[in-house]
Picture 1 (tube, each protein chain N blue to C red):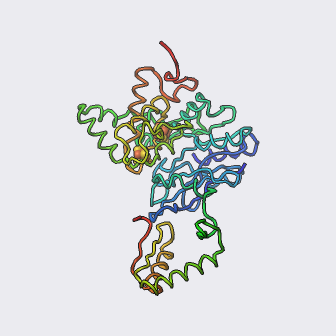
Picture 2: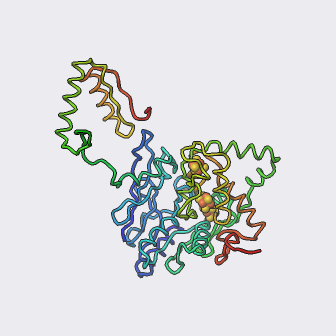
Picture 3: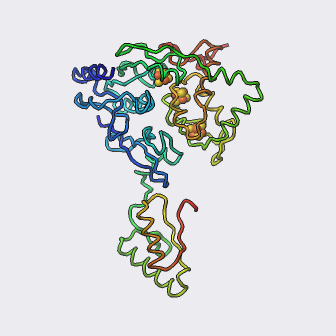
Length: 135
Length: 263
Ligand code: SF4
Ligand code: SF4
Ligand code: SF4
């Protein structure tokens, strides 16, 4: 008999609501909002309530994909990064810094967001940076 | 009180009467639902009291249904307050739980909690410890019923208008057990409409809870919009009580009159 609740933080936006994921026999089966969290006090939005559904979804991408001859194909991180870096470089040379924009995420940490805006501003030289909450 | 309960649960576990005890425990400064399988763990047990009595209650019966459907041969203990015991009674009569597989360990609620809940029976029939608060009558309901009909309608429409359609009221409810939920039926509730159509969304749930709600208040506590859902469901339960002399979970063996086909 193996049932536990694991305290964690919702990954869907920057609010940082706390929740328990219910885990039965090693599989996540449900979400329960954390009542003692000062952030959300036992409440969640519809996305938070359904966090357990995406974690183990077979539809999740687990490897980088590159469109080759019209088809999305799994590639290694090296190949994906080489391709992206060389395309950013050539677009920047041909069309200028501001022809490139970056879209970051409310689902990642502050530090990761900081890094991306630093990369946009210092490495690529553009202020075109936004995040998924305004999509 | 809690030491006596820990002692009783330890006995149930060590004697092998139950395979596990579904309760709450304090860990890392939070109170969480927990399945105690080892009598040694009982030290960290909590009754769901964080800053105030009963402010960290969780839908243990909902978890219990889940556990027993996964491990149908086991017998489990569960921590119950008055509302949870009403919930168990209701769930037995709805064939969601088998009373042979459940050993409730009952605790009475203190007066402060009973008053905040406006709870008419703040204790389970069988209690592991003594002491019980008086039942409270429902002042909030009486106050709203005292408004004239136009004001009352306006009151509810204003409250419902804040709904963000998170489905938290349904997802937390230990008595919401339907496989197919009417709140997800596209003909009744438009997909993608936020706020949901007012007042239909709320009235659908109210009608469905009329013979099932055991007045635990977990829905209202989970509502991010602070809609007084508990008062709404107290109202519909009151109608069923007056019309059919039935209150969900109060009489252990009673079946809901709304499930009976009659003249
Ligand atoms: S509804 Fe009644 S039994 Fe349940 S927590 Fe409140 S006072 Fe206790
Ligand atoms: S009070 Fe709310 S959560 Fe509790 S049984 Fe009634 S509808 Fe469900
Ligand atoms: S919990 Fe509140 S906001 Fe969420 S669906 Fe229910 S009534 Fe609406």
